[in-house]
Length: 172
Image (cartoon, rainbow, N blue to C red; front, side):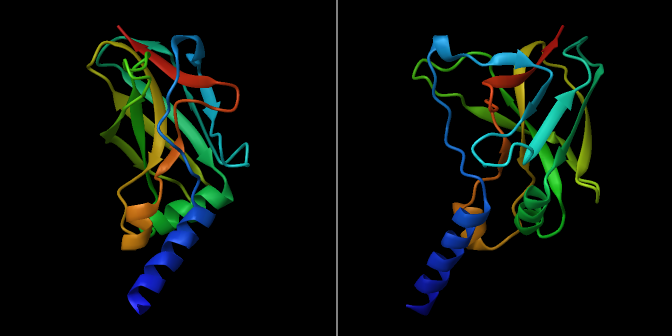
């Protein structure tokens, strides 16, 4: 019984400290507006996590630079999630939803970095895959408690920001 109580307490703590993001679902009329900078949504904090891209159109194989920042609250959540490793990673979305309206994403494990002490980060990535894609940001590998890793949400910036914008990069 004590173990169940501890698990429930951990889940409650996660719900109170981590932003809740659900799988996106939209119709063609609800497509996000391409943008070069975005901030997170669903957190109540307009600057919880923000990210921008230096160039929205780059030749395949060239370096794309993403920069951004996390609020103090987001930094604390990241520290718990990664047990102090403070790693953030890019996520990639197609520019159109699946037939069922969902927006599956791929974590780009080769496009991760450690956040600096001031809450800022820079990710330099080389994309060999041609095409247009939306990009987001999530916390790195979870090294926290089982309750946190099993029930938390690692998302920082998803497909939509507060103005229905999404970070778009086209690789040619």
